Length: 96
Image 1 (cartoon, rainbow, N blue to C red):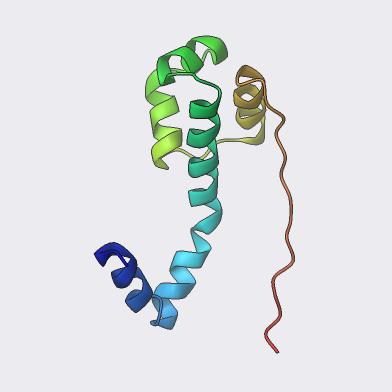
Image 2: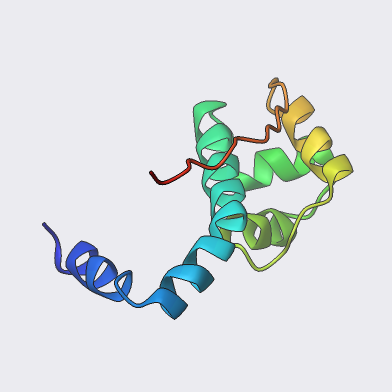
């Protein structure tokens, strides 16, 4: 196990940290999925910027999580990457 994973595991034992971490999960998922989709499409940030009309700097901000995209922006990005945007609600697991 890496030192980073070990630190995360230790911090996740703290209920306040866990709550905050989990509240940020959707934003982290968006940045990870966006970056992975761009790479899978074989596009650089600059190429994606040219295809969408979104600046390369804004693409970078989206990928590093300092800018939250609108649904319309996500649709533009999906189209430029020849992808389908899919958003889903997943029920929480109930603890027994």
